Amino acid sequence: MSTRTRLTRAESKARTRSELVEAGRRVFLERGYHGASLEAVADAAGFSTGAVYSAFDGKADLFLAVFDARVADRARQLERAGASAASAAEQGADLAREFTNASRQERDWSILVIEFWVHAARNPELRRRFAQRHDALKAAIGRVIDKMLARTGERLSLDSEQLAIAAIALGNGLTLERLAHPDGVPDELFPTVGALIMEGLARDARKGAEP
Image (cartoon, rainbow, N blue to C red; front, side):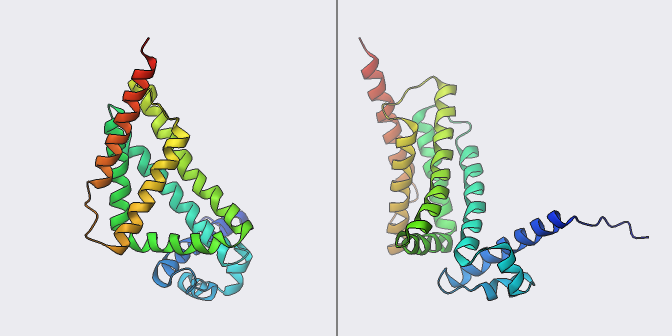
C-alpha cells in the first residue's frame, strides 16, 4: 500500500493555483502582460487551458494573483529592511535602499507592472482591483514606519499613511528614470533623499512640540 498522502480536493486546487501563479509570473516576465496568453501559462505549468480558466476568470485575474504574491514578498522584505533602524533618518535610508536594490535587480518586473498599471488605468473595475493591491504595499510601509516610531519614540510632522504614498511615488518616479537612463540614477540617490526627508519631518515635529 502506498504511503503517499493523497491530497484533498481543496488542497489539489490550491496547489494547482499556486503552480499556475508561478508559471504566470515567468510567462508575464518573459513576454509582458499583453504578449502573454493563458495558453502559454497553461503550457508552462503543464496543465490544460481549461485548468487555468477553472482557477482564474481571465488573464487580468491571473496577473493580479501574481501581483498579490509579489506584494506579500515585498512587504516582508521592507519589514526586514526597517526592523533595526535606530532613527527616522536611518529607516528612510534603509527602506529606500531596499526599494532601489529591488528596482535595479528586477528591471523586467518594474516594466511589467508599469505596463499593467497603464492598462488598468483605462478600465475602472480593473483599476479598482489593482489599487487594492497597491494600497496593501503602502499599508506595509506605513506599518514599518509606525513600528519604528514606537521603538524610537520619535515623532514625524507627516502621518505614516501620507508618508508611504510619497515614498512609493518617489521610488516609482526614480524607477522610471532608471528605465530611461540605467546608469543615470546613482544607487545612493534615493537612500540619501529618503534619509533627508525623514530627518526633516522629525525635526519639524520637534519644533512643533516646543513651547
